[in-house]
Image 1 (cartoon, rainbow, N blue to C red):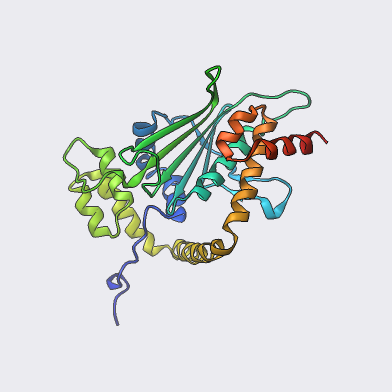
Image 2 (cartoon, helix red, strand yellow):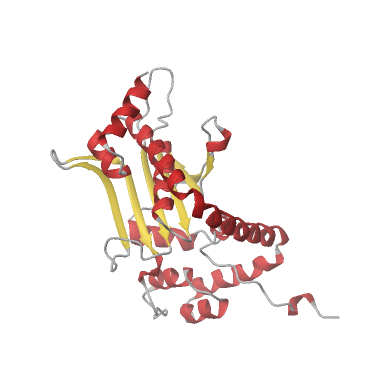
Length: 280
C-alpha cells in the first residue's frame, strides 16, 4: 500500500485569498507580509490586531467580507490579495475602504475621526507606470491643493520583479518574487538558501496535511471560475453599482464632488442625483 507521504503534494499559491488569510492569521508566518508592507508602503503593522472583517450594511445581498482588516486605536488597515486584478476589483476594494472610513464609529451625535488605509497586492501590470512597484494614492483637491490624509491607498504590484533570486541582501524582493511562483520548486530556487523564505515554502507544503484548508482552497478555485463566467454577462451593471455605492460613502464623509468624480468616473449629473437622493 502506498504511503500517504508519497502522494504528490498540491501546490498552494500565495496569491490565493484562502492561502493569504491562513498565512497572515498564523503568527509564525505573518512576518512574510509584514516585511513586504513595511518595505514597500512604509507602514509598520506592530500593534495592529485582527478585527472583524465583515462589512455589514443590513442588506445581506450587498454585504462583503474583506481579506484582512486590522485595527489599532482609531486606525484601520485593509489588506486585499488580488490574484486576478482588474478595474472592477480595484473599484470594489475602494468601496471597502470608503465603507470603513465612512463608518465613523458614531456615538450619539459624536463622530470619531479615523485613519483608514487600503493595501492592494496586485498580481498584474495593470497600472499607469509599468516600471512601478508601489503606487500610493490620497484624496487631493487640485485647485486648492488640499489633501485628505485620513484615507490612503497603496497598490503593490507583484509582477514587477522578474527573475529574482536571493543574494543575501534582497529579502523583500525575494518574498515578492515567491508570491507569483507557480511551484514549490520555483519558490525554493527563488529563496536560494534564505531561511525565512524556505520556512514559508515548507509551511505551504505542510498545508497539504490540512483537509479543511485543502477543501477551502479548492472551493475558492471553483468560485473564481463561476465569478469570471458571470462577469461576462454582468460586468457593466455590477461595476456601475459599485461606483454608485462608493460615491454615496464619499458623500457621507464630506468629499467634494470633484474628487468623487475623479475616484468613481461618474458624471456630475449622476453625483447631483445621488446628493438629492441622500438629502431626501
